[in-house]
Length: 110
View 1 (cartoon, rainbow, N blue to C red):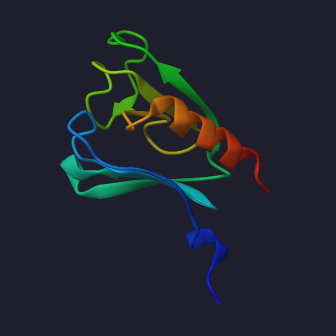
View 2: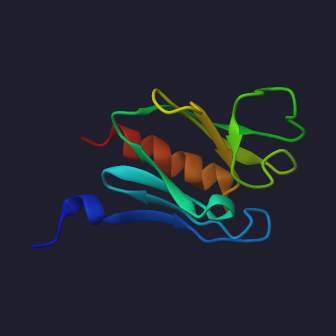
View 3: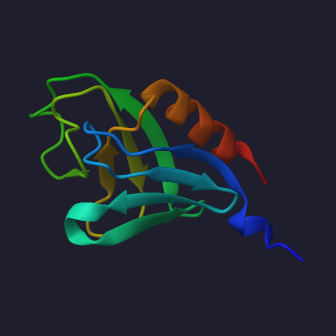
């Protein structure tokens, strides 16, 4: 039997703007690849607070956000979570508006 949590709902492929990081939404979590530090950041539904889109330049909007790629220079997505050292994570998926839409749908799922 296939685990429902492993069901891939949406994937943003890596590109130059995202430093070849890929970002995936599963039924139970969001996975943000962070190749620079050879890790993947996992955001569970319980930890998720909100998602928003930011337009450049945003050097001064949040000094304590973790930026996974060229987020300061491109239109990007910011996710706020309620745990971890960096509560706000910003990154540049291939289609920021669609990624935000998918995250909003994911957050409303039971």
